[in-house]
Length: 511
Image (cartoon, rainbow, N blue to C red; front, side):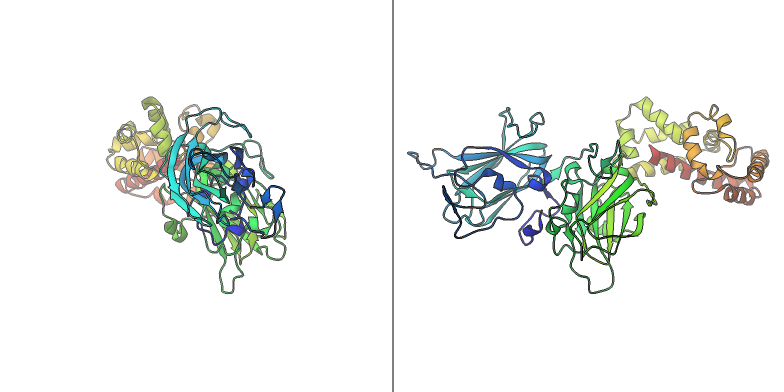
């Protein structure tokens, strides 16, 4: 993951689960007489010092066992047990024999184990290892890359070499099992997780430029040791700015951000901004890059040399988001990025997991028309968020006038005293209060006018005034009501039904 890995072959879109910077470590080995097992997880591909020797022989930057002296050349083998920095699913391996030319192992195999009870440097006591790479030939002085198809979560790996020899580095590429844990980092508050931390499952997907050091360094848990362990773009000689897109460990709402330019003193960005997007599962990277749905999370803010900048009050949106994009103007380096907040499940996922009664109650809070609730329930399970919203709209189009009016009865009047209405509209009052936030703080004159206009509207049409009030002030709602009260009955019912669908979608998202 460090800058010294530049130029090495990697599995794009995956991270090294075994990287020392992520917390990976070697626990035990059969033999490391010439060179220690801890070198396997270090950054870079290893170096070679021609005239460097120890009391045991030639110094080598890797793991090297002594020569086996047994009757049969392949009667025994050496091994090393290592712990991943974060539990995950393995997709690729790199057994790098860089600089090991006359002393590399001719063959290797890899086994895996999931044992989350083994903590710290404790060697797993379980022995149900599963082979994911059968004994395979290795080339000398080379990266030896292998794909792996193993869908179980893994915590430990065992590298076997036949019969002995040296390996410079061992990389285990994969996907971190997403899990949000309380963040123990500068700038985090109680109950907040780092939504993009590599150890939680965050991963950098794309960057405009990573010439000096790779983008995934931004997400590593420990402070950067130098510029090479951050993310740095080359000097921009054309108009524009650099950026990096990060997939969050889990969909979440953002409470705070930390942008750290540690070690970047003459090459830090002039300004930084952050955007967020709530993208559907399986979205393509190219779709993210070109999407027009990005929302401003942090407006462009000045950076300073080698300093941690905390942003909370400056945030203009909370999400929920699935991805964030950090923009740096015009170029430069950032050592770490933290996005603190809480995970938020998708409405479709929550509804699929509920019992029939729980789902019925939840949907009723979104729309009070019993026929709509029954129709949407019949569409479960929902394959995606898009499928849920499509079902909600399709079923709503089939509603009769009576169904629509039933939905209207679950709304309080805009601008009314919410404390008095709460008992009557208990199933939707908590949602309605947020939707009608624009009525808070309005003058008594406006609230009085809203009340009288609502009475007149209800007297004419026989139902209360329905409008998607999110983001609208009391004055704006009064203007809308005054304009609609002169509509013919059929046109007004169609308009009100459309507003009801907008409100329903907003409430679905809050699930």
